[in-house]
Length: 67
Image 1 (cartoon, rainbow, N blue to C red):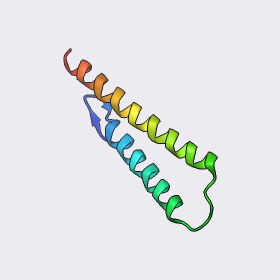
Image 2 (cartoon, rainbow, N blue to C red):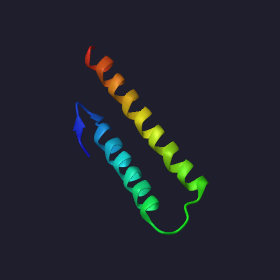
Image 3 (tube, helix red, strand yellow):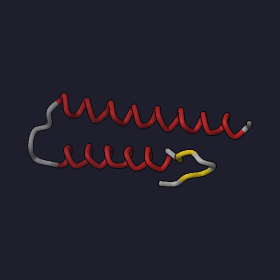
């Protein structure tokens, strides 16, 4: 993991998680088996959480850099 000024850089980790969830959705939708609505809703919720976390982390880093 990357450390910059003794704190964890989280944006790359969140981006990797977001890509993994998107890949999982594409895999689930491309399979011939029926897709559970609950599973699809959970994956979409995970995308929303990852995007919100990326936005919050980027805002926090901007305000923290101003100190």
